[in-house]
Every structure is written in C-alpha cells, then in structure tokens.
Length: 167
Image (cartoon, rainbow, N blue to C red; front, side, top):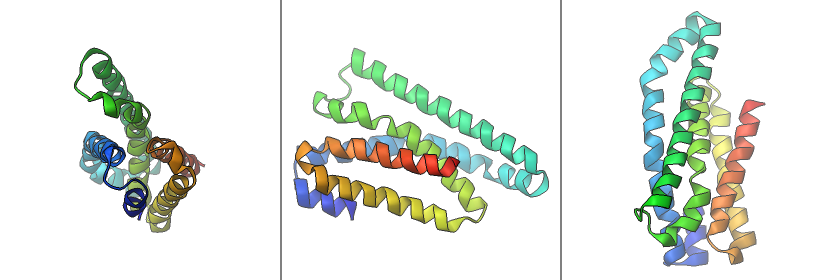
C-alpha cells in the first residue's frame, strides 16, 4: 500500500528513484545483522528454555552488537560521502537522514525475532501495520515537502515502535 501511495503522489520520477535506492541499500546493509541473529537463534532458544537469566544476557549482548555494528555503518557512510563520490549527490540529502534507519531497523528486526520466539505473534505484525499506516498518512499529509518526508516519517514511526517494544 505504501508503494501505491508513493507512486500515486510522485509517479515515476527522481523522487521515487531516490526512495527505492535508499530502501534497497539500507535493506542490503541490514542483512548482515539479520544473519547474526539467524546464526544465534538456536542458542537463544536453548538459553530461554533452560536458563532464563542467560537468555536476557544473550539478548543484551546481541542488541549491543547490533547497535555497535549499525553505528559503525552510519559512521562509514558519512566518511564515504565526505571523501568519495561513491553515492550520487542527488541521493545524499535523503540518505543523510535515512541512513539512521539502519540502526533502527536492525534493533526493530532483532526485537521482532525475539517476539516471535516468545510467541508474541500479535505484536510481530501489529507494529509493522502501525509503521506502514504512519508512513502513508505522513505521505498524504505532507507530500508537498517532497520525498524527504518519507525519510523523516520512517525514522519517527520506527522510533515510536522501538520505544513501545522496550516499555
């Protein structure tokens, strides 16, 4: 639905190219974090079922690893932008904001995996629906600002969901 909304407002244009390029790049970067989680899932389940306190230690350790890894990627992005022309200048304004989604998405995805293991399936999908609806509403209300509204909207909606997940 979000894609239909983007296309109905911006059509085939540079704005949609910027958005899709950014989403693909952030998703590709975030795969490494998801691979770490996939590799450790069995250990987490064993700790969760046998020894409750170790699973929270493992959760905290992996969360910290996600945060450090994501922060490193964000730092490297700004170094690359400053010292090279690897990313075209037309993408930089949007991506300077959207790059922080790497951190938020890694934490959000990691927490969703944990919710799934703990059999909290309702939150797994409900939070995704909230993020998508928030972005669609933001897009329709503030579309005159340009596609950059989606960068802000995605950051804000994912931050709200993360705050809710940690409460």
